[in-house]
Image 1 (tube, rainbow, N blue to C red):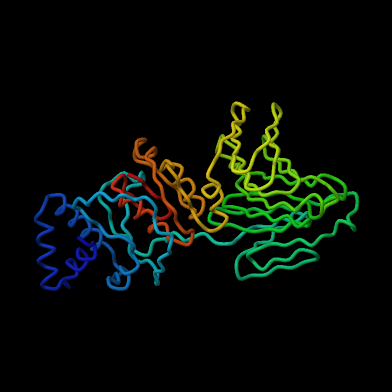
Image 2: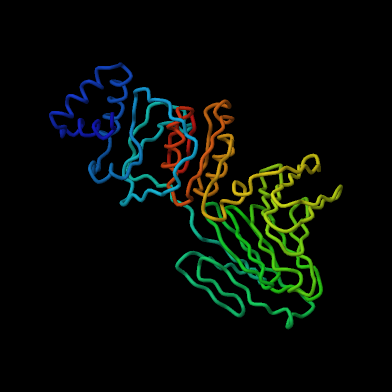
Length: 378
């Protein structure tokens, strides 16, 4: 039964047909009656009125206490659903630990927004420039339209001292940058990159992925006086001459993964050197200092760059980690079992978080509840 009918019952606005539906639901179990009284008590305690019709139209799911038929979810549709209006009602937990099974009604809570193009540019003098879609920035040889950052080549004028800039992408953000040598870099959520304003001629072109995930389309060495390109992380170096590859090195993860899309790269650490072939991925374990290589599905590894999430036989814990960065949410699990349930699916990054979670919920393997920016998986 729709939660909207409960609110209409409290406000005495049910139609005759809705009265029949409500009474049937109410008489089915003691749990239903208890739930109704809790919602009514919460509603009555609020001084401001709730706009039932307009508010509820933006809620993306309803409560259903009946068993649903098992849904076999092979691949989810990637089309986004656009819902207008602001969220005024939401089903939430009523404890700080997010452990209750009975939701309550909260008015005008914070909504979870889809990620967008935004970043913080830190210049060599330490000043910060906030970049976001719709706002432009330009100074010297640096230009930004709020969705990308472009550096003009100035290597011939470079003196002996190299100036470095930093680009930091927050949770819920992404950004594109073109370095002064023409190398293109796509930066994922929760990522920080250090790079020179201009590369020194006849020297290795070196950047540092301090943390996070980045996709590199490297300008060929032949166009840069034969100089190679090196991406360093906390524990490894990736050396290339001109190629496309993805590096994922999040602070909280023990594995640094490097995926080769085109060309050839060499992954180095203190103990070994590994050459990657196209379609292969190296996994460097920061705890053991060991590197392993695997053949992978390239699309699954780099789909984020093209605006999609691609999950193939991925545990729910890992799926929620990816979603938490893009939607800037905190995820909690009620038990360990559901963390290891695996799913397959392809989603657009333009889709709302509730739309994605609802599709996952329809497998009947797990359910979810949202409280502000906290998501509880049950």
